[in-house]
Image 1: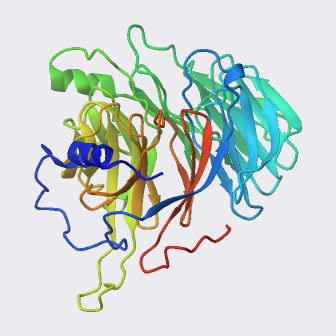
Image 2: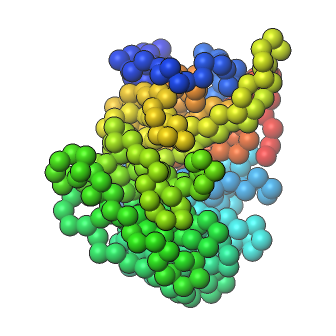
Image 3: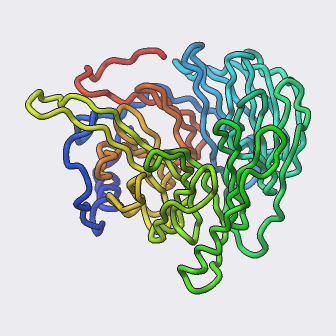
Length: 423
């Protein structure tokens, strides 16, 4: 269903009118995406999924699907306490696994073991067979698990809402080591950060505003925790109301050295030296950020054949319900562009076909340009979406707040509109 004219104009106005002028540092050349005003997004799978009778309270679907492009499957959790496996081509149900609470966690699919790892709001981590949904093991973490686990170096890493980092044996679910910080007192934003594993370090952020790095071998500190709430206090002149660092750390490079990008809700976006934790740069204007995504595009030829080759580009995208959608330079944190968000905010931006796809809690799904935040196309969805889409190639999947699985095709540049190819 395409958006009504009024809805589309509302969203375009929300993204474009009253926004700050495009900064001089922005590259005006076209990306790989060839701009289209409409017709780029098409719904090709629409399958009612969530059972309303099993849902307690308001129906919101969060988390993110996991796509298996080889066996044509998509795995997604639901507020009806279930994890579903479905055909990515038709939406037909393959199996359903029941937990004791809503599943708001993005599953992790391991094609080597043909297994899925995921968490539930019941406080447990699960491993199930991807082919049948048969339980392999269950580990009780004593706090809801809604961030995607990480499988690396023979260990499974997960974080729960009680500020506990866990390292488990993937085969058995046995605890290898854990690290815990006492949650911050006072008010916190909903959500928390997941783990990032790079080589021999696992990076995680906590609700008290600290970012830490631990040795993957035994959980010992690689560098002392960095208190971003103290940074925010220096900037604001007072202790911030919200201390949280809810963004999962994102890896990157600045000046030839490894960094991690994180965002303090009150203090803004930071680049920290991955080896020492020292601050590399900070942008304190980008406040209220709840999601970070590093977008990049390789150098490529101009599609009209009349321009010089387009250079490679990268942007650090920061989603904030308070200050808008930011595109920052990964090198120094300077603002490239900023867009105000529609009421209710948006999900993390998801790269697909050279563009960015987002869910909006009030207006549906929208596709926009990463170079200036301009809206390309949109699909109006009654009830909105709280889940972050997942994308592979030109295919994307998301579960709406009404409990319907949507499979979308994003038309790439110069490809016929009627092409619908299986994964």
